[in-house]
Length: 420
Image (cartoon, rainbow, N blue to C red; front, side, top):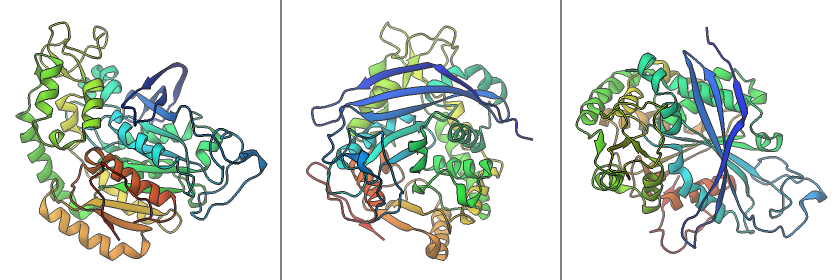
C-alpha cells in the first residue's frame, strides 16, 4: 500500500528575485517545502514564479468573468494588476532527469514577455515548478535517505507522488487550480502522467485543463527492453564523468565543453552556474552531508565543488522496474477529456533508434486522440534548455488556442519552425 502523508511546513519559505539582462523580466519567487512518503519519507520543494511589476490592465478585470476561445475557463478578482482577465492560466512545470527546476527560468521569463502582448487571448497568472526529490536542493536535504534507501533505483513514481501531494495541497490558490496547465519535459512528463494515476481523479474532476508534453517518450510496455539497453548506456557514460572539480569556474567550464550542456542556451548556463554546485564536503562527489554543507555556491574558498544532484541519483532515475511504462496507457484513457499536446525536437539525438521507430508508430496510431503534435526543427531532446524562447512560443500558441503557429518570434531567436 502507498503511505501517502503530507507535512506542509507553511512557515519554512523564502523569497528571492532573479535579475537578468535589461531585456529580461524580474521574476519574484516563492518557495514552499513539504514532506511526502511513497516508499520512504522525503522532502520536496515547489517554487512559484510571478512577474514584478505585472503589466497594467487596460480594462478592469473585476467587472465580470469571461470565457476565452481556447476553453481555459473563467477568472475574476485576483489579477487586477494584469491585463483583461479573460483568461489566466497557471502553469506547472515538471523537469526531466538531470535538469534541476531552475533551468526553467529562461523559459518562464520568455513566457511572461510573450503574454504581455495584449493581442493574445491568453495570459499567465503564475508558474510553479516542482523539483525532483533527488535533484537540486531537495537532493541535498534528502542525501542520507537517498544513500540508505535509493542507492540504485529512484522510480518515477517517487516524483509522481511528490507532484500528486503538491496538487492536492493548498499551496496553490483556488484561482490557480482552476486553470492549471501541466507542462512536462522528458521523464518529468511521465511522472506528471503517473501523478494523475496516483490521484485517481474522476475524469470530470482532473486537476489539469490540459497537458503540454515536451519530448516525453510516447512509449508503453513494449519498449521495456530498449529502456534496459538505455540504462546500460547511461551507466557507462556517467561512470566516465567527473564527480568534482577544483573550483566553481572549472565545473561550469567542463559543462560548457560536454554534451548536452554545451548545447544549452547561455541564459540556461548562467542559471546552472548560479544553482547547480555545492562544496564537496565528503570529498568524493558521491553525496552531501546536509548538516555540514553550508555554501550553496561552493568552491570559492578553495574547496572542491560537486553537483547538488549526485551522479548516483541521476543514474538511479534511469533504472526502471516497468512501473513508469504504465503512464502512457493510463493517459490514453483520459485523452477524451484532457487535451494533450505533444512537442518533439526534429533531431533523434538521445534514445535508441528502435525507440524512435516505436514512438513514431504510436503517434500515428493515436493521432486522432491527441490535441496536437508539433516538431521543432533543428533541435533535439533538450530543446527547452537549448531554445527557451522557441519553447515559450510553442506553449503560448497552445494556450492561445492556436497550436503550431500564430505567435511570432522576434530578433535574436534564430527562428522557429513548427509543423503539425
